[in-house]
Amino acid sequence: MGQKVDPRSFRLQVTKGWTSRWFAKKINYRDWLINDINIRNMIEEKFKTRPTIAKVQIERSPNLITVTILTSKAGAVIGKGGAGVNELKAEIEKISEVPARINIEEVKKPEMSAKLVAENIAHQLEKRMNFRRAIKMAASGTMSAGAKGIRIEVAGRLNGAEMSRREKVIEGSVPLHTIRADVDFHVARAQTIAGIIGVKVWIYKGEKG
Image (cartoon, rainbow, N blue to C red):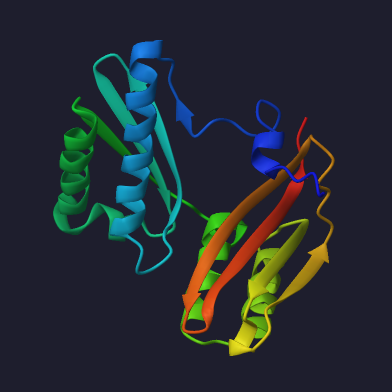
């Protein structure tokens, strides 16, 4: 049996932090956790046509919820005259039942975000692009942006083949056992005509500390 662990949870408190930051009593914990999941799903669903959301961070105080959205296209999230933010704020307040504050931060290098890279590859596979071309273009783009290494794996009925298989591309180095290594990771799914293709992306950005 393989002993696999998510590279992000493996590095919590060392090079990674929590995306939800709050402390709750036992009576509130379940509701707040479900609220966080619903808020993230709502935001992802709203911008699912194009991969733009890199990360959603949630902080809570007794009577306020602060949602920070890291995105590659701030204009698309903010909307015309701030209409998009106001709409998001209203929906978050409806889910959480407390006043909400929204911060929008632009990701300067989307090629360095594992989530954006994985979702972009999945988006291309859904449009029937050749999987080898999609993953090689993504890998070279990330390395050009300044990454120390990238590993991409795709698995499923690639290019509509009869048998499912797994293919990968590795550029540079990706040290998975070094805890101080800053490794970003994400899993995306491409819903193709032949079935689901899984996309895994590891991006090594260098050592911390």
